[in-house]
View (cartoon, rainbow, N blue to C red):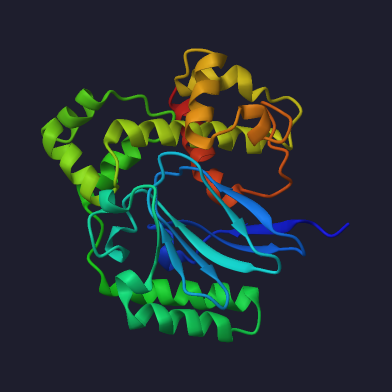
Length: 277
């Protein structure tokens, strides 16, 4: 059978690793495909070949849309706050929105679209996209270092209350919230909840290859009060139950894709937390 779509993630080139979480190629088969994007905490650049690239702002809930048949998309997913220099406006103005990049970048967006369309294949187009991002980000202002550190401390398996975080960073709660809204797009607590759920998905991906894992039993490790709490968060963030999202399971990801590039850093953080004891 011809698959409805294929999706291949890769680690970004080293020059992008500090800002880009993962890059990917997605190819749609002969039928339209219902795409469900879920919150990751960062912005994403989606580039359907032959069309203008689009920026997906920080999501607080599911973004569901239909991809036409025979569409190929190359893309990049940024760490929270790390793509703010691409936006041209405060990140909170793009929350839950998808915008054409020509609205933000003008003629440069059209040139990028032409370069991607002229590439001899999807892999070559992804290489073009990464080279473009390296050049553009080299010209851009660096990410806000305080927000970058705060994001690191809000990752799963780093239990921290927001009041403690402001004390650790020597900043008031209102100042931290303002900088988060400008750079990340959402408040620190909202990002923390999103990253916690990403940690759950990372465990589900790891469990797909290890029959000894029971991710549902590890929900408490991520700070969920119980299974019902996890289910409510999943419904709020994705519009689906955990079983629906993970393809008829609650503790194993059954999508068949390798998401190591996306979820490896989350699992590495868990491993460090376990060693620290």
